[in-house]
Amino acid sequence: MVNFNIPPYVGEEINYINEAIKGHKICGDGPFTKQCNTWLEKKFHAQKVLLTTSGTTALDMALLLCQLNPGDEVILPSYTFSSTATAPVLAGAKLVFVDIRPDTMNIDETKIEAAITDKTRVIIPVHYAGVACEMDSIMEIAKRYNLLVVEDAAQGVMSSYKGKALGTIGDFGCYSFHETKNYSMGEGGAIVINNEIYNERAEILREKGTNRSKFYRGQIDKYTWIDFGDSYLPSELNAAYLWAQLLKADEINNNRLDSWNKYYKAFEPLAKQNIISLPYVPEQCQHNAHMFYIKCKCIEERTKLTEFLKMGGGICSISLYSAA
Image 1 (cartoon, rainbow, N blue to C red):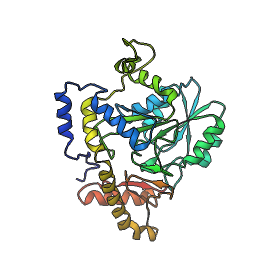
Image 2: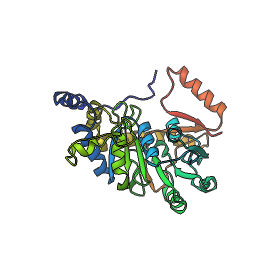
Image 3: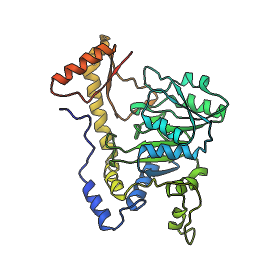
Image 4: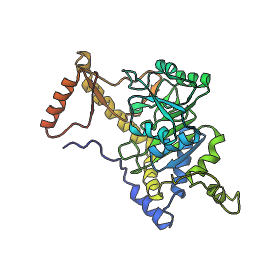
């Protein structure tokens, strides 16, 4: 059996986890969490980054920070993971799905404007497989209609669009550090806040509705419950695991790109014969080799290929998609 994925591991994770244990600080927002936040901010030139318990809760936080009201509408792609949809639903919004582009599998930016109504408040572009959506067009539409943009960059850590890190272009960005992602903390994620006006409320929301973050910084003499909130802080043990990988981020990224390019070269002859289609990466996009997939011509061919791979000893870890 070929595993769908193997969780990333660089070898130093256990040392940092032991360090966290010896420091008697294993709950949220300890030294490793803060180091990860700072690393992500500096690496991606982000205004503020906060680790969360998952990419899903990063999306939940972002949509709650958008302060939606019942009846408000959120635009998102018709092809995405469930979390992209559950976050606006939990925030009380109505979902408006827009079809995707057949080349990148991302939301079709040319179809967004037709989906906008006087109730639209947010657009959620999903950067599928770490390949950026057409963000210039999306941001121009958002500006024209006074809409917020929440980038679902769960698969996009280390990817960029015209030199800007994914997650840093819209009002908010959301990363995932699930075990299936390029960089992992088992379960975890991060919210990127690109406008400082949301910083304080994000900290309060993330810390169970309290201003404890200000207390830890010495800005107040005691912390209190002051607003709606939840617990979105990951364990220091998870953050310590992630920290080891962030220190090797470029090495991991280059290794994945090397493997991705080998797959592409190996399958290219079949693509030139129009037997399959390969991933498309627009010129202005730098991807992170999160995923390599092939597209079959129809569901019948895909089914036959899947059965053939099963007969060979296990389902291939490459994702298979039908063009139909």
